[in-house]
Length: 512
Image 1 (cartoon, helix red, strand yellow):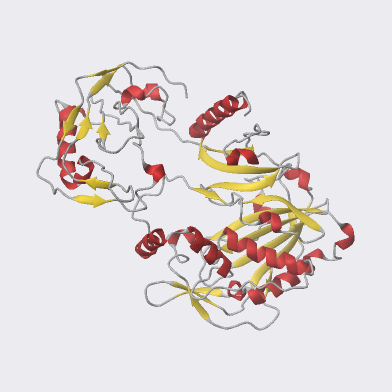
Image 2 (cartoon, rainbow, N blue to C red; image 1 turned 120 degrees about the vertical axis):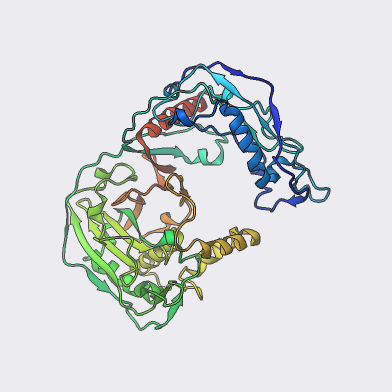
C-alpha cells in the first residue's frame, strides 16, 4: 500500500487529563509476567472510524472523547499513575498518583479512502497521527497513555468487499533465525503453491490396528492443559519420504509399517482407546480400551518431484493423502489416530496422519511416529516411552514443557484454563497465531530404506490460520526454515511488499 503524505495540524498543546473523580493512591508492584524486559516500551496503535450518524454527532467531538477518557480513568486509575523503579531488584511498580495521561486534538487534510479500502497495516507516514512520545523505550516516571483523535477531518465512503485468501510460503536460510550473524540470505521466495491434482487409489478398506499385546485397561482423566476447547479436533499432518536403499526395502512396506504401528501401540496404548465425556463437568477422559487406530494403504501416480523440491505447505490436494475422518472437530467415541501410507511411482511414499490434539501436540506426535519407524527399522531396543500419570501427554512432552515454564506463568495458566474450557470469553476472530515446530524431531524419522525430505501441516477442510515454522532442506541440501501464512489478499500483497523491501535492504548490507 502506497499512501500519500499528510500534513497534520494540532489544535493546541498536549493536555493532561485526570480522572473525573478521586481515585485510590496506592502502589501496585508488577508481576514477573508484566515486568519483562521486552515489554518496556510504549506501544503505538492507530484505529480508524467512519461517521455513520451525523444527527448523533456532538458539536465538539474531541471534547466528548476527552470527557469520556476522564470518566474511564476513574475505573482504570493505574493508567494515570507513573512507573517508578523499586530500590531492590530493579523491579517496576505502578504508583497510582493520578498524574494524568496525554490528550491532543488535531486535524488532517485527508479522507479514510486515502488509507486504503479497508485501511491495513503497515501504515506509512503516520507519525503525525500519533502523539510525539520521543524515546518510546523510556517508561519510568512518564505518562503511561497518549491519545490523539481527529474528529473533524476524516471522511469515508465505504464499499464492502470480500477479501480472498492468499497463501505465502517464505523460505529463509537457517542463519536468518540466528539474527543474521554472518552470511547472507541464500533463498527467499514467495509463492502460492500450485501443484498438480493427484488421484490416489486406496488398496483396500480402512482397517483397525490394535496393540499387538495386551495393554492396561484404565481411564486417564485429561488435565485442563489437554482438555482445552481449542484442542478438540483431529490435527492433520503430511510427511514425505525418499527411497534411499532399495536392498533394505521390504517386499510389502505397508505391512511392515502396520506391524510396527501395532507394536508401538503397546507402549502408547492410550492412543488405541477412546475419549469419553465424564458425567460431571463435561471433562474428557481417555478410556484405554485397545479398540485400535485406523490404517489405510494407497498408491498415487505421482513422484516426489511433483510436490516441489523440497515439498512445502500448503500441499495442494492433500485430502487424497489423508484418511477421510469426516468432521475433524468430533473427537468423542471415535479413533484418536489415523494413518495413510501412499506409495509413489519413484519408490518414496507420503505419510498422512490425523491425531487428536488433546492426546498429543506436535512434539508428542513425532515421538510416537519415531517409535513406529524405529520398530519398522528393526531396532533391537524397544521404545521406552510411556504416558505420564493423570494426563494423556507423553512423559517426555510434559517434562519439556515443565522446563520452559516458570512457576508463576504455570500457575497463571493453570488458573485460567478451567475458566476458559467451554468457550472463549474474548473475540478470537482476528487473532494471528504462530507456532514454531522446527525442533520437534521431524528429521529423526528414519525407516532405513527411506528418509524424510519434508512435510508439515496441510491446509485441508477449514483453513488453518496458524502461521507454522517448519524445518526442511532446500535445493542445495541446506537446512532452511519455512514459514506458512494465511492472510486476506490485500494484507498478503502488502506483506509481500514489506518483506521484499526488508530482504532487499539486508542483501545489500556490508558483511561483518
